[in-house]
Image 1 (spheres, rainbow, N blue to C red):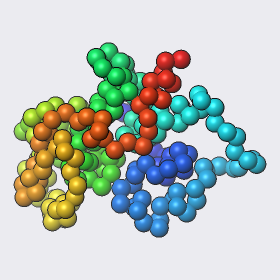
Image 2 (cartoon, one colour; image 1 turned 90 degrees about the vertical axis):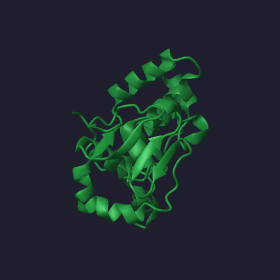
Image 3 (cartoon, rainbow, N blue to C red; image 1 turned 135 degrees about the horizontal axis):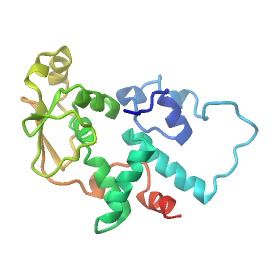
Image 4 (tube, helix red, strand yellow; image 1 turned 90 degrees about the horizontal axis):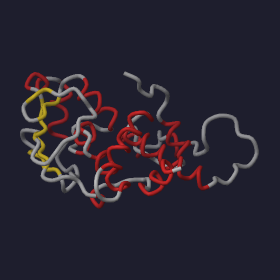
Length: 208
């Protein structure tokens, strides 16, 4: 399966803002954007002002980087959002937020979306009582997200259990802090999603 393997801190520097790709590290002095805000690579004089097309591309790339999706998969998800009734940009945001790896991250089971994706791919996560190793699987209302019984004996799980208390959980999810089992209370709405990009700009990018 194709995936991005280069340094993710470059993506934040390229976007010009923190995309929280390394979880809690982004709040420390080690954050690459705080230490060196300019994009990586050789700089030639002043940076040119971005065109409207360039701004739209930047918003689309920020969405991709945030959720860790490659272009082909992102374009396919956009097509699905386009076919749904309602506002395409908002539909896209909801579809991105409904990904299983994102739900695992939102529940606090992982420090970043990339770590959540790894947990899912390695078979640690159960969806409605069944092992699911597909990070792009879309959760729906009423779904239960828990841990595989064998995974509860790992050192990671033992360290996670006491540290997960106090974490902020989105209103569309609920968490049983003792059993570390999450439930999808409802589908997320655009107001529930803390995004750093504009869905409208992404629609305009693909409309050309």
